[in-house]
Image (cartoon, rainbow, N blue to C red; front, side):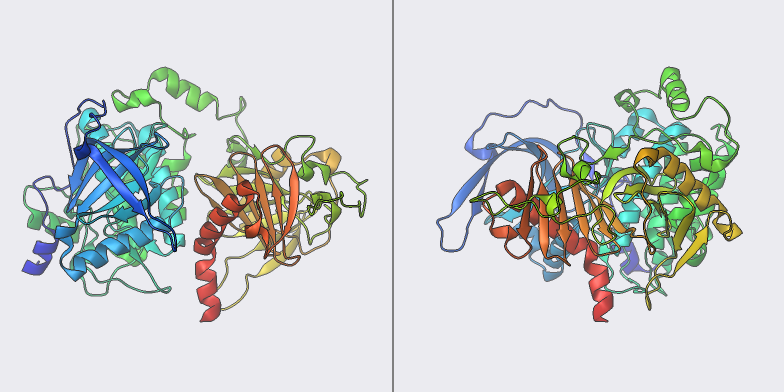
Length: 588
C-alpha cells in the first residue's frame, strides 16, 4: 500500500465508523435563543426575500467536515436532521466539488430504504443539508448495544439494504461506503441508507471508477489494487462484510493495524469464530458474496435467491424491542405462522407469502372501478361552465390502448412485483428485470426477456400447456399471482401483444408504473392518482375523494388545482430520474 492510499483511507481509531455518535442525551429542545436559530433566506426572481426559521436542537454526530443536529422547522414543527458544513472547510475546489456531487446524487434519489433528502441552503458561514431524521440511530449503535444479531434480524436488514442497492445501481449510482454507521433506522425500524459523500454516478454502462476511497474494514480488494478500476461490485463486497459483521459482531478482516487489514482483504482471509453458533446457510451466504474477483461475485438478484434468504419467511420489519434485546419467541412464532399456509405446499412457487395488496380506487364512486362496467355512455355531454371532462368519457377497459394497473403485490424481497391490469391481464415484473404477463382467461402468456442495449426486448408468446422448461418456475409464480389477484367474475379476453409494466418505482410518496404503451400511472399513498397519456396528450387526475378531472398535457401545470400541480411537479422530478438512462441510450 502506498502512502497516498494510506492517507486517503486513514480514519479515526474506530475503523468502522467515520461518523462518531454522541452519547445519549436529553431530547428536549434547547431554548430558542439567537444562537439556536438558523435562518434560511429564500430569494425568488423579482420578489422580496422571504425567510424560514429552524431551531437547531440536540447534537447527533459528526463526520469529516460536517456536524449533524436535530432541526425543527418553526413553521411546520417538523423535526428533521440538519447537516452543517462550515464554508471555511471548503476552501479547496476539490472539497466543494465533492460536496456538490453528494448533494446532486442524494437529491435525485427517492426510495423507501434511502434517507430522504429534503433540501439544502447556505448562508455566509455554512452549507446546510436537511435530511429525514431517523430516530432509532444507526446499525452501529444497535450493534454496540446488542453485540450481534440473530439470523432472522440479519435477513430482515440485508433484504432492505439490497432493495436500496438495486435502486441505486439501476440509476447508475455506486454508494462505495456501505457500513453499519451509514445504515439508519427510522421510527418504524425501516433501514434507511444514508451518507452519499463517497457515492459516484456512472455516466455510461461499463464505466470504471478509479478513486481510492472507502472505509478500511469494508473496502473491496479491487479498490485497494486500483489497477482496473471498480464499479457496482464494490457495494456487493461491502454487503458481504456487513452480513458477516451483523452475524458475528465484528468485521471479518478487522485487525489493530490498517495495513494488516488491507493484507487480509487482498488475501480474502477470514474465518467464523467457533464459539458463535451460526447456521451453514449463514456461513455459505457470506462466502457466496465475498469473492475476490469482482467479475465472479454474485449480483443482487442471485443474492436474494440464496438459501439463507429463502429458507424461511422474513418479517418486513423488526419490532422496536429489538433495539435492546433479541426478538421474542412469541414474535418468531407469529412471524413464521402468519406467513405460511397450514399445509405444506408441493412447490417452491406455492410457498409465496402474499403481503398486503395495494388496491387502487377501491371506492364504488371511483372512475377506475366505474370503467370496469360495460354500460358507460360513449360521449356524455360536458357540464356547463366546466372545462373538466369525466375520465370515463374516453376510456374503454377492454382497449389495449388505455390501460392501468388496478392491483399489485410487492414481493420484491424474493421474486418481484405481481399486478393485474384493467383488462384482466396479470403480470409479474421479476427481480432480474424479465417480465411475464398472461391474459385473464389464463390460456396464453408472453415472456419478455431483459432489454439489450442495442435493441428492443424480445417477446415470446406461449401456451400454458406448452412452454420452455427453463420458464417453469416463473410460470408457476405467474399462476400463483393470477389466482391471488384475478376476479373470475370480471375476466375479459384481450388481443396480443399484452400491455405490461415496463418499469416501476416506489418512492416515499407514490408508486410509479410505466406501461409498455408509454402511459405512466402514479398512485399516491393518499389514494390520489395520475394517469399521464402521451398519445392523447392528456393528464387524468383522481383526487383523494375519487373525483376525476381531465386536462391537456401542456396546460395541466397552469391549473388552479393545487393538489394536481403539486403532484405533477413531484411526478415530473421522479420521472426525470426514472427515465434518464433510457433517454441517454436513445441519444447515443
